[in-house]
Structures are given as C-alpha cells and as structure tokens.
Length: 424
Ligand SMILES: *[C@@H]1O[C@H](CO)[C@@H](O)[C@H](O)[C@H]1NC(C)=O
Ligand SMILES: *[C@@H]1O[C@H](CO)[C@@H](O)[C@H](O)[C@H]1NC(C)=O
Ligand SMILES: *[C@@H]1O[C@H](CO)[C@@H](O)[C@H](O)[C@H]1NC(C)=O
Ligand SMILES: *[C@@H]1O[C@H](CO)[C@@H](O)[C@H](O)[C@H]1NC(C)=O
Ligand SMILES: *[C@@H]1O[C@H](CO)[C@@H](O)[C@H](O)[C@H]1NC(C)=O
Ligand SMILES: *[C@@H]1O[C@H](CO)[C@@H](O)[C@H](O)[C@H]1NC(C)=O
Ligand SMILES: *[C@@H]1O[C@H](CO)[C@@H](O)[C@H](O)[C@H]1NC(C)=O
Ligand SMILES: *[C@@H]1O[C@H](CO)[C@@H](O)[C@H](O)[C@H]1NC(C)=O
Image (cartoon, rainbow, N blue to C red; front, top):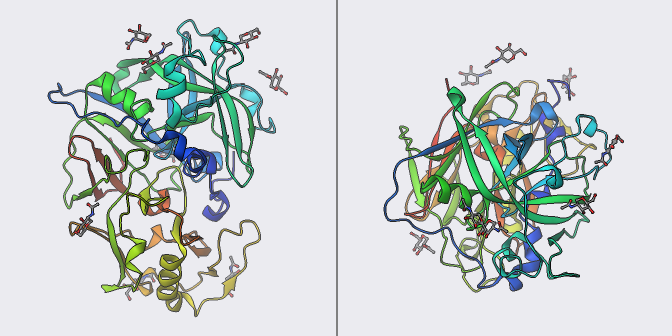
C-alpha cells in the first residue's frame, strides 16, 4: 500500500487497459454486431448495490468494487470502466508479481459454475466482438480468446467464459448473477503495475456486466456516486443497478446511444465549454456529432483519471486557465509527464481559478468544483491532457468526482448532480 499522503499526481496514470482506446483497432469488425442494452417495457423495481471505493490507498486514481466470482466464490477487487465491454480478472502472475502475494487469481478450473465459451460458437464469433473476441480457433471447443492491444504497447491476452457472480449487499443480503461473461487474463503487457485484480466493464452493450446486471435484476438504469478521489479505502459509496435517486439540482442530458450502431461508449452532446460564463472559441466541428466520423466527440469514462481533450479544445481551455496560476512557481514533474502545467500552490486560492462549465445540447450544465480540475495538494496541476484533434475527448473520473451520475437506458439520458457521496 502507498502512503496515505501520496500526492494525487503520482496516482494518475492513463489506464489504457480500462478500455477506451483498445477498441479503435476493431471498430470495423464490430460494425453492426453490437447489440444495445434493450429497452424494457415493464420492470419490477429491484436493486443491486455494490460498494464503490477510491483506489487511492492501493496506488491508483481509479474506483473499484468488490465482488465474489465463481463457486466456491472468491473475492476480487475490480476497477470500474464505462469504456470496456469485457469484464476480466487476472488469471495468473501476469505482471511483475510484486502485488500478487495474496494470490488473487481467478481460476476457472476450480469454479463449479464456470462455463467454457467455445471459440467456434456464434456467441464468441459474433456477440462477443465488442468484447474484443478474436477469430483464433485452433479446435472447435477451444475457449473463445481476446487479445487487446494498444499502440502504447499495452496488451491483454486471455480466454472468455461464463461464471457466477455473488454480490453481498448491505444487511448481508446476497444477490447472485449467473452467466456473467468474464475474461481470464493470462498475460499482460502494461506500462504500469496494475494494483487491482481486474476490471468491471459497464459499456452500453448487452454482454457487458452492465447489460447482464440490468437484465438479471430487471432494472433499467445504473448509477454511481464518486467519493473524493483521495478518500481512504474505508469510505464507500455505491454502484447501483435500479433504484431511483432524486437529488436536488439534478441535471439531465442525452446519451447519444443508438445513433451510432457500433459505438460502445457513452457519447454526450457537448455544445461548448465556458470559463466564468464566457464561451471558449472552439471550432464547432469539435462538438458536432458526426455518425460517419471515425471517432465520436466526447465520452464519459469512470476508468480514465484525467480528462483528455482534443487539441483545439485543450489549447483553448489551457489558455483560459493559465493566467490564474501564472503567478505561482512552475514545477516540472518528472514522475509523470502527462502533466504539463504544475505549480507550487503555496498561497493558492481556488477562487482565483475561472469557473469551468461544460454545456450540453439541451441546456444542461456540468459545473465541477475547482479541485476536480486543478488537482493535487502542495503541487497542483491542471488536470487535463492533450489528444490529437481527431481523437475522442474523454471526461475522466477526477472531473466527475463528488458527483452522482445516473445512466438511464429507457430514456437514453445521463443525469447528474453534485454530492459528497458519503452514505450511511
Ligand atoms: C504466482 O507467483 C507466486 C510467487 O512468485 C507463486 O508462488 C505462485 O505459484 C504463482 N501462481 C501462479 C498461479 O502462477
Ligand atoms: C484447466 O486446467 C488444465 C490442466 O491444468 C489446463 O490445461 C487448462 O488450460 C485449464 N483450463 C482453463 C480454462 O484454465
Ligand atoms: C445460462 O446460459 C445457459 C447456456 O446458454 C442457459 O442454458 C441458462 O439458462 C442460462 N442461465 C441464465 C440464468 O441465464
Ligand atoms: C454465457 O452467458 C450469456 C448471457 O450472459 C448466454 O447468452 C450464453 O449462452 C452463455 N454461454 C454459456 C456457454 O453458458
Ligand atoms: C477510516 O479509517 C480511519 C483510520 O484509518 C478512521 O479514522 C476513519 O474514521 C474511518 N472512516 C470510516 C468512514 O470508517
Ligand atoms: C513551495 O514554495 C514554498 C515557498 O517558496 C516552499 O517553502 C515549499 O517547499 C514549496 N513546496 C513544494 C511542494 O515545492
Ligand atoms: C480564498 O478567497 C476567498 C475570497 O477572497 C476567501 O473568502 C477564502 O477565505 C480564501 N480561502 C483561503 C483558503 O485562503
Ligand atoms: C445536440 O444538441 C444540439 C443543440 O441543442 C442539437 O441541435 C443537436 O441535434 C443535438 N445532437 C444530437 C445528436 O442529438
């Protein structure tokens, strides 16, 4: 475990394996194969709650849930991603092995409820394409395989099967989900040491954990509330399937799903960004939703820490923010060169920083507190990174913290409101 006072900026990695970029490779193959989470006419109200915590104490700017997988059930810590369809768990000593002394491996062979998914089945060759299944099939009954590669060298290799997931809720109530499609990651090549056991995929796809959990609990929405990213591990809020939360100041905007047949992301209809009420001059094609384009425009992801913005957006925003921090001593961070604008915050006051607002097509506004974008303690940094102009921008988890977020499928709406997310 890291020291409790580890600076936030050391915990921030761009965790590509959380899914956002890996699918670019396979977009064409996935075209038309993707099945949306379906609308449901009637559903009896039901509820599935998983405690959601910050992984800062484990050394990552991520959020994770704990769940039991297999029979007999074994407990795993799963980082949460709304950018991945596939849910996967480490199945062997895949990385350096340093963190693995507690042997948190998934062993399908030892689970009575594990079901092999043959590589020759249409479930593998068609339904699981958005989960990155590939067409390597040496024998009919050989397991369905995946091989994620990202251009930075990140790679995940493994086999996919079904197993049972057991979730213990408040009051010791047990909920069992069957036939959850899970990847068993046998080999990884990562730029970082991944301190969690696996990843929970919440993409809008029928085969993701979100799709399966909604179907089996007969609910139509899920939500999460993000505690402060530096909260200790004993502080939790919830990832909830079903239920209805009414918070004051709830805003609502469209999720652009179903517009773009193979998209597995939560696209938003952003129309602009303002600082202290002044709209930034950003070329409108940065926001224009273009169904024929290679990439979407802005997506929301809980598995990416920093907010990544396409160059024209980033440049404008940074230009608007820099004057407020220019009088502080600039600090070069060697540990992590994702940060370009860091400073010694002695004498800093958040009221100096212009108020950021992200504007959506229907008039909704997201107004994150300054600490969500001028991040860190002692040394502070602007919490944005620059992407190429053609890349999809990502609203990451630091910008989302201390807010409640609900994904409402029947209505294709994203609802959000500020909250400390401290329950109980
Ligand atoms: C993982 O590594 C540990 C320590 O190196 C070793 O004892 C253990 O047998 C390994 N487990 C697997 C499943 O390879
Ligand atoms: C199960 O164990 C056998 C023997 O150790 C091994 O060959 C096989 O690959 C394992 N299957 C899975 C799905 O891990
Ligand atoms: C799990 O999948 C198997 C094989 O498709 C099917 O027979 C079974 O009914 C499914 N169970 C549930 C609860 O969906
Ligand atoms: C795996 O689970 C999915 C539903 O999540 C089901 O459609 C499929 O038939 C299952 N396959 C097996 C082999 O159990
Ligand atoms: C978390 O643990 C710390 C000590 O490690 C304790 O001071 C604090 O009260 C705990 N918080 C909760 C919500 O349990
Ligand atoms: C920030 O500057 C102050 C005053 O110059 C200095 O005492 C302090 O050590 C610096 N802090 C960091 C984290 O560099
Ligand atoms: C920041 O500035 C505001 C307004 O000037 C003031 O009320 C507040 O106390 C200051 N906060 C700190 C931590 O200095
Ligand atoms: C996004 O919002 C704008 C402004 O309200 C609207 O004209 C446009 O149709 C919306 N785009 C989509 C794809 O819904």
